[in-house]
Length: 159
Image (cartoon, rainbow, N blue to C red; front, side, top):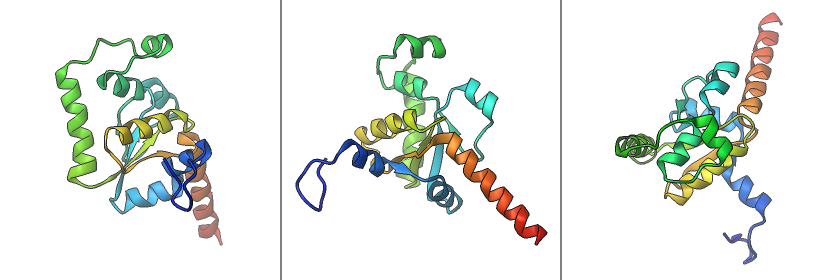
C-alpha cells in the first residue's frame, strides 16, 4: 500500500488508521443505514458483555474456518466445532454479499478490544470487500461511548 501524498509505503500505524472507524462514526453510519456492524466476538463474550443493538453475529473463528484458514490450537479449542461444509460457506458469502454488494453497506467488524476486528477487516478487504472496517477499540470502546452518550442525555434532561 502506498501513501498518495508521496510514494513511500504506509507504516503499519497508517494502515491501521485506514482500517479503523470510531464508534461515533460507525453508529451514525448504522443509523443512516449505510453500514452494518458485524459482531465477531465469540458467543460466550456476548453472553458476558451483552449484544450490540442491530449487529449481525459472525464469530471470527468461524469466519476464518469457513474461509479455509488454519486456526491456532487455542482458537480450535474455543470454537470446538466440525469443519464447515459447503452450506456454511455459501451462507457466509451470501450474508456478506447481501450486506456489502446488494445493499452497498459498509462492513464494520467489532470484537472485544479492536484487535481481532482489524484482522477480520483485512481479511474481508483481501476477499474484495473494500468497504470493510474495524471498530476502533472494539466493544469496550463502543460501550464506553454509549454510556457517555446516555449520561449526557440524562444530564440534559435534568437541566
